[in-house]
Length: 167
Ligand code: MG
Image (tube, rainbow, N blue to C red; front, top):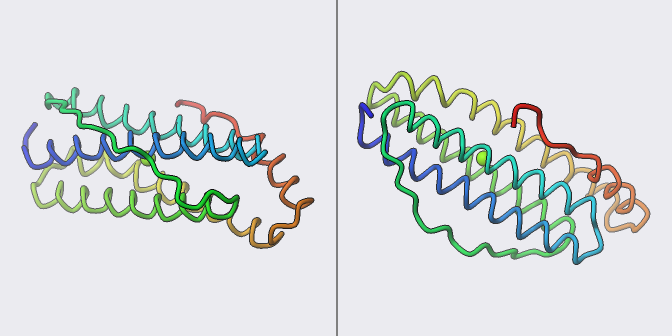
């Protein structure tokens, strides 16, 4: 790659995406244990999306003649195993990932790496969507405030989430 700093940062981002996938898979497991199969489905779809993000960065590195260097993925911790806690933590996580992408974009610009700069635009748009989708579920969960009937309906809605086309 043109810039070894950008190459290292993309490798780090691959790790961030894989760590995200790992966290969402752990959350899917917790959701199932809470008796919420729809929540479990939503987090599994999210897990698959994160794997697809890691794959996009991986393929981009190869296209740019970069070297892939994978690192260890930390053990995921589900700190708040409640329906609302899972989504609040997911939103905080997505905000963290957005910050990582913004920093990566700043670096690409500083290094005059125009190809990476343009490549990252897709991820910035994607992060806006990820945060909005997660926030929408938080809003619904706050509206029902733990009411079981409301939770049942939200779970049914989340059960309908399908894999993204082009994944
Ligand atoms: Mg991602």
